Length: 637
Image 1 (cartoon, rainbow, N blue to C red):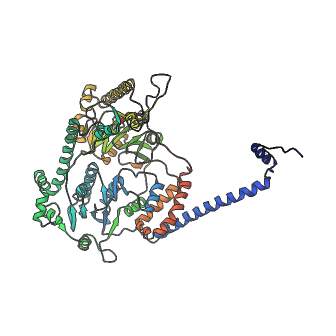
Image 2: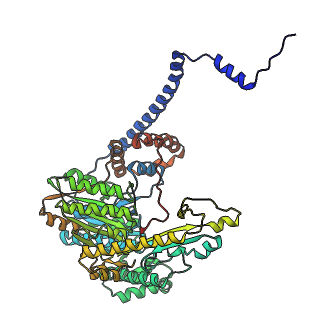
């Protein structure tokens, strides 16, 4: 009998592998072709859908051309939040608009431009203010609009009418910029003043076993207080009340001036709203009319009829002849192309200051520095205005931007800062060395100070039986691990660095503002001021808005009345320009909410379109951007 030789399983595998025939070149080609065809089919499908979308948009656009007849009312109806710069990328906004989950925004520059141009436009008879769709706006922006509307009224003599259905406190301030306010009979209004209330987490964090380590200079630097206290500190209350009372007086003064009543009478109306409403039998519109805060109560039909009497009836005799903000701006762009060779560049720094490159809505140290550098190197740019609306952020990013501000000055170009609603901490840091600083009286600024914070949670882990142990080559090894107790030497090191940063901050402010370091220290220490207070303290130069800053920059560059304003922003790709242009045109003609009527169509359209936009517009398939911030990095907020 022949011997039976056993073959091990690993040998079988090896033998089978060696006996397999290698695929031929033709086999590889035949296997590759289906993958190529599938990818090509997917790309074609995406491209066709994009073309279809373009055709749909263009059909809406082609239906009408923007036409402005005489006796037309210009309707200023800010939509969503009033901002200095749209947040996010154009492609992201485009997709979100189609999906119906975009947070609407209106640019402040567009409001100012439309109001300024309408003053001398003979086709515009009436300026109509409508605050109903305005979700949010800062008091500093309202003061800037107030100046623009007062100037419109003075130049043109044209009436300004506000129509409203419901109004919050700031919406009312906007409406009150008009000659008269017409309120809907079913309207809701309410005044509540300004407040600062936050949740405080110390007790909860203690129960969890989380240790919070805060390093700061300045008893008024209260941004991180909620993590180390159960209530607001005495210093934080003092600082908050000081600037909020000033803001509230500014608000009340603005209302009282337009209503020809005293601030005391206005305060009495606000404090007595409940009793006044009872006296008006619960009718809010009638209550405020009785109090003299609105002028007329009319429903939509009678509002339209009233406005038609001031301008003209529309073509259907169903309302008043009017043009909206976007349509008017589109028309102005066609009728008023840039004509001057000299440019004044405006660069926006809005949002939290972060390291690296950031999309609009945040201030990137690299991104904003690059924009300033572009303005410096552009020979047609004769001066720069930096529009700041930021509560601060990363120290290094703030310094990157400030260095570019100085570089513009070294290059011989004037640079003027225009502060928006807030320019505090890091927002002040990037502003302080400019040739001149303008701010609205309601701008919040100051907060000169630095803090750093991180948390450790070894107690939390011990509660569930998890322990940390190990070895290192020095006493610093693992010092930043959040699952270990804080190294005392590390705490000392961080605090020393924070104190050094603070000294740098107040020394730089002293040099930039021509003050003594000791004086700066007394008004710094993290304390917040309104611009009115900051001007008295020497932290800013003038009370004024963006237009005042532009005029100053033009004068310094000796190009008065001979310049065009350009906004230097991150470059758009051709695809982004295409979609944003199409969207802007379509939004003048059609309500994009029409697309929402059939959710099935939306779902079919959006999933491949969104994928295509990500591939074609971003060209970053598979790329993941991570924002890693050191837990103990010092902050200016």
